[in-house]
Image 1 (tube, rainbow, N blue to C red):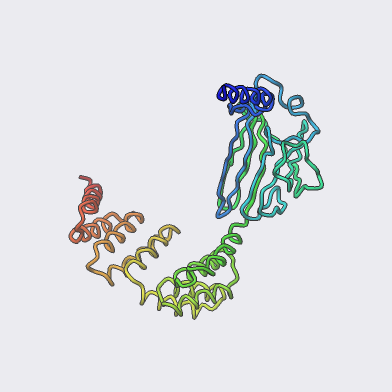
Image 2: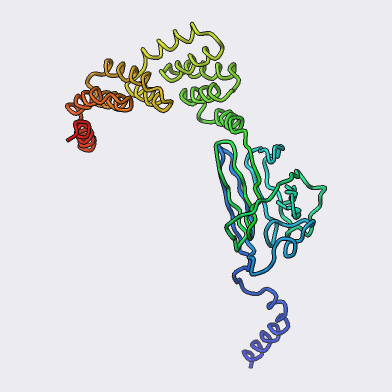
Length: 349
């Protein structure tokens, strides 16, 4: 009897709670599924989070998405866009952070809105007083039909990318620019407060980046001097030479470069030579590789690198001669086979 009473009580509670339980429901696929896209520009991460409505045979622009009204630029909750560093959008500065992304579509130009509130449901609670930035963008006709709304990052470079909304036969391009050198320098300054501060190569790397990307030369000088005080290397002395040259002190630059070559290791010279090749300075690379061969005549790798530079220059005889010398010294089978095959090609066999 007691068991029966308990069962009846539980049933009564379930019936009483029926409407509330029904409201909770079970998880089913969303008609407009969630999506995210990310792109890194330099060190800056950019992410768009959104939901993807379908055309579904409807007329989108001017009807499903009315003209002249604020639209969530997606479905369901806020479409959001986040930046890990400050950026410029449409030429205007926007601080790092996460923003609610809204638009005001028209038959011609659109207003694209970056709103400080990113947790709303769509654009229903949108308030213009919370706007961080508004820009005007001209949408483009697209030949490709997009059934579901999408965002993509087009044409990424080290300092820019275009975030493009695509739906139906329309593409809305949002140009984003990043001052990558400034972001990298700020990041390096932070890193050099941690464990890298005890590494002379880290200070030299930062100084080299400053020199190559318009950084403050006095700051770069302090960095490279700190690196040299820890341990003098080809790398940090050559960076100091580059700083002297940037300052217009060509005599000091020449002296420092000569000293850097005197203390360079085989690996230093090899890396330097390939760096010159990367800059298409093949003749200068050959001179460095020749110096490496003179300093390390028992290194097959030194002859191999010199041969490669001669081959890039188009001097097949000099390339073949140096590959031949490398072949007499190389021990590991993969490199030996590679060099043999290269010599065979050069001889036309």
